[in-house]
Structure formats: C-alpha cells, structure tokens
Image 1 (cartoon, one colour):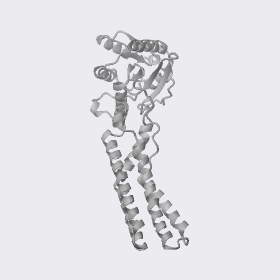
Image 2: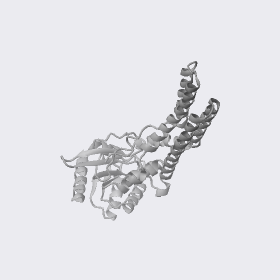
Image 3: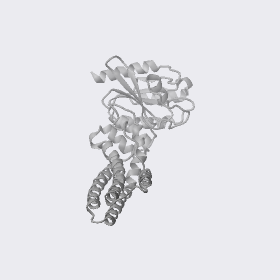
Image 4: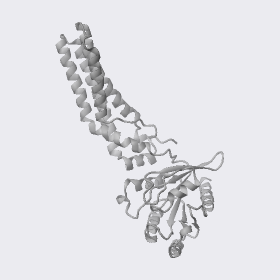
Length: 340
C-alpha cells in the first residue's frame, strides 16, 4: 500500500501566490503598452486582466483542494499519523475552507466577467474589472492562514514512508538510544540515521525483508518512547504509538543492558509494561548491547522478566551482529504462526 501522502504536490505560501499574480499582471500591462487601440480591444484588455488574476487564484486553490486526500477515506493508520503530525481538525478545516473559497472565487469571476462584457461604457468596464479583482484577492487574503498552514505541513506528510498496515511487520520499539535503528538496519533494507545521542529517529523508518517469492515482511524503526503518560508524549513518540497500534505483526522490544545506557532498567521496564498493557500483539524481548554488558543490569532485567513470566529472552548486539540471526529467525517464525 502506497502512502496517500507520498505524491502530494508542493503547495505555495500565500505570498508566493500573490507574487505570481503581481508578476503576470505587470507583464500583461507592460506587453500591452501602446498596443490597445479601439473600444473593442480595450474591453478585451480589461477582460484579460480579470482572467489573469482569476486563473492563477483558481488554479492554485484547485491544486490544493483536488490533490489532497479525503482523510475519511484513508486507512486509520495514516489518518492517525496525520492527526499526530498536522492535526486532523486543523487539516480538515483548512481544506474545507479553501474548497469554499474556490467556489466563491468562481462565483465572483463569472459575475464580474459578465459585468465587464456588458458594461455600457469602457469606464464602467474598468471599474467592474477593478472590483472583481479586488474581491477575488480579498477572498485569497482571508484564507491566507489556511494556505500557509497546508504549505508548512504537507512536507511532513510526504516524509511518511509507504507502510502497508495489512502486511506482516516487525515493529522495533523501546526507549531512545537502545539500538532500534541499528537493529532495523541490520535485518532489513532500511537505512535509518544512527548517531550516539537520543532521538536520532524522528519519524517512522521502513525496511523490508524478503522471505520468499510470495512473502515480504516490513521492518519498522520507531522513534524512542519515554517513560511518561500517553497524553504527555510528543509528536515524535506518538508516531511510534500509531505504528504499535495499527500495524499487524510482532513487537520487538529492546532493553539496553550496556554500562553506558541512557535510561535505567526501571525506566525501560515501565515503558515495556505500558506497551504490554496497551497493545494486543506478540512481543519478543531482546537485551541489546551485550558486547558492552553491565552484568548487574543484565541480571536485574533477567530477573524482572522472569517475574513477569517471560522466559524466552534474546541477548544480542545489534552493532556487532551477535545473536541477531537467532532473534530474526524466531520473530519470523512468530509472524508465520500469526498468518496461518
């Protein structure tokens, strides 16, 4: 399934549209200087001015209204991501307002075109042309905030990868800097940014694992989740929540058991418990960075997981590749079982 946002056009800001109108209008005037002779040509010139402004405004509004998806018709996964990144209500309100503006601009244009054509004198034709352009530009200006809102936010939506919510997926989750990006890069085609500081992953990153000619599994690198209530989480974290909520497959939860981990075992455990409580999906647990293991943390988390009835735990180093194949084999087996 392709993302409904990946082919969205670039939307110009209000000032860009006004600048385009100004340039075209000036070019029309300069190109006609000294060439307008006779009442018939003079009236056609006034019509041409009105047409120039109307065509630009109408085309730009159509580009916005007709190219953006109707959010009530898209998959809940993509709809929720839109809500997280842009705001469902703000997006819908902006598109609705601009659709109304387009209808109003069309109505004003048709009305004033007729007035310019049938005005008894050229002076009146000029007056109607000025009024018509003024009213069209007034509609555009009144909707400036909606145009600029979409121009600023559509690029965020275009960055969402084409994730198929119906395909089997390995969702790698955990707190920031536990090695999620490194693991996804190791097991799939994804190329997430990897850096030695938290919150490197600011959006969902998609990779694929081809199992055979008929089955391709998605692998998702999610932004790190912090130990705090859902309502306090920021848009970056909420993207991870949307992935965990909507995608079909297995959650691989990573614990960082290294000597220099950013977050305590207790914090990582609380996020893990939150995920177990909220999402009805198979969860596979892996203890990462075993190449730099803190034995005390390692034993502590093993004991915690046993107390929760989780006996099967994988010890891996995503960076070095230790234990990754065994983890992947098991996760794919769980996915195949869920498909059968």
